[in-house]
Length: 504
Image (cartoon, rainbow, N blue to C red; front, side, top):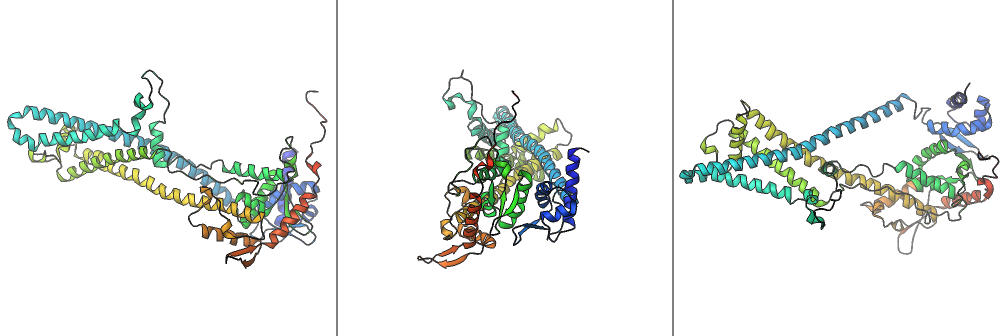
């Protein structure tokens, strides 16, 4: 029987033992039930506690009691968990596929229709000029139609030329903009399609590496503090509430070989001895164990777009051109239709008349094509092109407020843990924008309430009339933790002498 299969069998026995002792069991209970070696049970219990969301309690003897008041349901292997993971992956895949298709559609629509309408305007202008030249003998009538149409078409065409050649989008085409010679190599700019996608969809989640960053911070704290961490310290590093932190820290124990232990006065601590076995001893044994000397990682804020405001403005202008043209053609197809007379070729419908006549040479009945292709489709696209960024703008504001509250929570937890006996809410006042939600007063009160659910504070009124909180239970826990850490010998992290060298 292979070692992996032996480990799976041992883990199965441990979980079965817990299943029959959901109201409470110690490591000794599991050893008695399974007859597994003590060191094996100690290694597997944190893994089972994490998977089945165990509750940890400290008995008077200092032993850890594991119970499962929420039921013995696996977070990873139950049908609900597996189905949830499947739906999450399916949703992500569907979202990626839909976004890819939509991005291609946006590129084709925005640029494609812009170019198409520009060509229509150019063709109308040329036809208007030709018609004006051929009808010089009837100047008065032409001024009501061809000349008026020429002015209208030339005005639109002039607008398009200005948008295209003087916009932020084509600066890189002009070497004078960069102050370079024509022979110099042009610097690589951002592709146009990426700039468009940035305006519509943004630039993605700036915290995709968050899980790794957070774990690195927790590990760094452990290695700096003799491999021991308390629940309030874990809360200050992760920003989790007491209930969330208790569930997550068991996951860290399962992942990084940690074990919960109890101090002499019954305070639960989490010990990760294996993380101390490093060749680099730079941070191990440091005496500075305050959060004023250790910065917990904070999440980055979302940005609406990495484009300049001017570039996003030009995207809005181009989309407006498509919207105007789409509305123009839809209106004329619904009002003028296929009935075209000289009266219809005025300044307002000249482009439509020319487009209809040109389309008639290729299509027997161009009216449905003009109605849908040049009217409804660009109108719908233009609406979506504005609607998606508008909705995303408010979504970014909402998400950033959530991030700011989470970051402030870390700062607040850290401050309270460092000085638990004189906590003033107004002192929780970090300067970083990432840590300042809109309603600071409400966020501070929430932090006090959350940590108060873990350790009830004494409340007093300060000299200036402000409320002052004294978390005496946290101070006691802090003293017990320092005493426990002081009892860990410095050589606990020593690698020892080399007993084998592959190079001889």
